[in-house]
Length: 519
Image 1 (cartoon, rainbow, N blue to C red):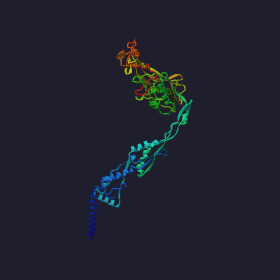
Image 2: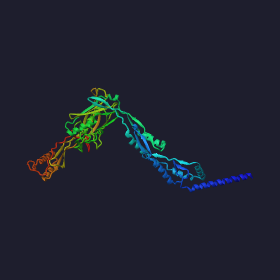
Image 3: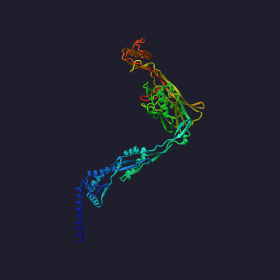
Image 4: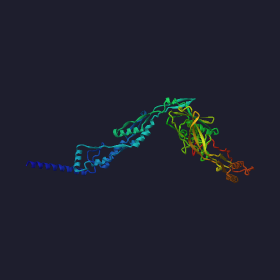
């Protein structure tokens, strides 16, 4: 009898409990579109909110964080203050909205009941996870924090009154961008309390190149070379001197590469250049910096004699007269030509350049380690030669009748340069250094044809048709003198005086520059 009573009581208790469970479960269904009471996302109480309302609440919180200042400590105590928004802060775990909405509503009925009972005892909190855009963080550090870096000053040489003086040599400090970005990201992800903060960036020392002991050893002449520009006019002479000045005094450490173009550019009046002769499509034309290739060519030969490693060299399109074929080194802005070499020696080198009496000289100093009996020389070999057998006349309506400018013939050649090494007077090696091809250009005349007089116009056109430059020069001279018959003194209306133009030659004044100076 007692057993029956106990069983009945237990069953009745179960019925009451199940009834309460069903009521709780039913209540959870009634609120399927909203979040149960007691649920937080971060510090935000999202109880009773639907998904959109909860999302707006969290986004508003994240938006407020964007104005939080974060100070980045750079070199020398300099501070760069940015906001979290400037570092690209963003909310990345939006899936917590679905988890919050489904709590107490997903799974079997027993699990839902259990989750709701736990909410009655304690609140449920989901974390707000945020990330910062790495590219944005990197840009802030690399662009705004490195401006306070103190660069190292490499020790260098200066030659004065025949003596070397050692200058510079200072340790620098700089922001290690990669390490600083990693450190900042770690702080923001793991340590930031979402309040105003300060972060010390990673600062590293930057050691200068060179030391007094090595620089004091630089005193031996490794190679020296001189070329003449005696036939050059004032403007080209000024360009040669200016280019020499820009290179003079360079100290190059082991492994460093020298670029002639980088040293002497830009080719502007502000950088000391004048209009002078240069090569352009087989013609001698004026351009800013014309003649600069004589600078690079002279240095090239000093580099060869010093036995440094040449990494880039180009010959001119037409042969120049200030060095033997294949011993030239052209630079040209638009075609990307440069002369480069590397200090492949164990010690630093010093480049001295100077001009005097229309001669340019480069001397390379270093530490001589070659045997005293070793002598290096260079020899040009002509492989083929092409001489033009015609003349070219170009009619120029922009110049008056009487104007004639003649460019002398350029012989086409192929050549190669040999490096010859002797030891104690005996040749021990002969090495081909380069091959060069120079195009031929016929003797060319630019002839003015502008005139209002039809007789003069016909006469100059007839002369041009003969394709004989000397005949054209005679006719042009007569027309300029007012002689319609090449013997009389008939006045010609409409003929403007033309300047006397000397014949252009392929001398050191020639340079190669499609739209930029090169020789």
